Amino acid sequence: MKKLIVYGIGSFSRNLIKEFVKKKIKIDFIIDQKTCLKKFLGINIKKFSYFKKFNLKNYNCLIALNNHYINVKSLSHKLKERFNRVYSPINYPNISNIFSFNNCYWLSKKKYTNYQISKVIKILKDKKSKNILNNVIKYRNNGNIFDCPNPEIKDEYIPKGISKYPKKINFIDCGACTGEVINNFIKKGFIIENLIAFEPDKKNYKKLIEIKKKVKKVKIFKFGLWKNKKKFRFNTLGNTSSSIQMGNKKKGKLINFVKLDNYTKNFRPDIIKYDIEGAEYEALLGSK
Figure 1: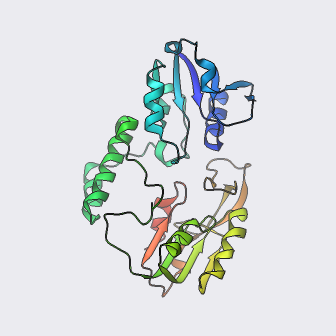
Figure 2 (figure 1 turned 90 degrees about the vertical axis):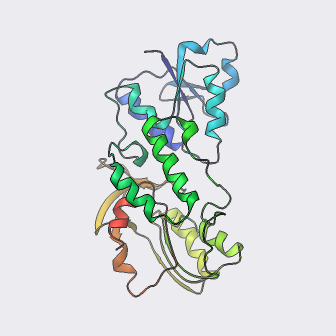
Figure 3 (figure 1 turned 30 degrees about the vertical axis):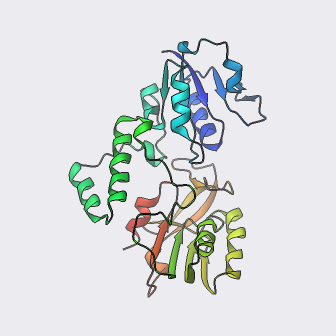
């Protein structure tokens, strides 16, 4: 196997690197353009300019970024010019047959049949959504980052090209974080008449309750969402990457997870938004 360099040292990358170290997979360097860290777990961290005179064809590069504000396609194209091979997140298991990182939904080994996929595509109303789903499936099947759809960063929940929402909205926000999405709807001129929001991260929750100043009828719950009532260890980061710690009985704070249906009786939502770091499927089972 070629020598290995990991690109990125954010929270996602750190968890990934810990798994590699645990599995005794050697990482020669970490590349990061902004961090002030010099080392992580004994591995040297360098800016990309450091490798200007390196023959990087002797190295493989693993992109360990989980940030849609970075143009990963452009970065991948740049790295492919220098490295022997560039791995996208979908390729991670190909690095070693002992490698696993199963608490991330995009690395799940679960495969869906063509019949299941076609049923979902038929449900989607607009052509744009159908194309996005088809390209996501293509990316997940082959790991080619250039098949992955580009995210719409500014208006990810109010995208152009799909049916317009009513001006007055009953909103359920699952994974409300600090209220960014709700605030964006308000800025766009929508009136949130009734809001039910869920946010299990304590730091995010403290900021989220400020939304009561802008929406009259609000219920905010400091719970996660699941198909039934349960407790999970939760990684409270105070940002958009807080998530369940599957299989880890010690790391994270013990948080209550609930069934959405039990908290929304007689509530008629116009929009239900889910952004809960891979727990969407289980939460949907509790949203009948």
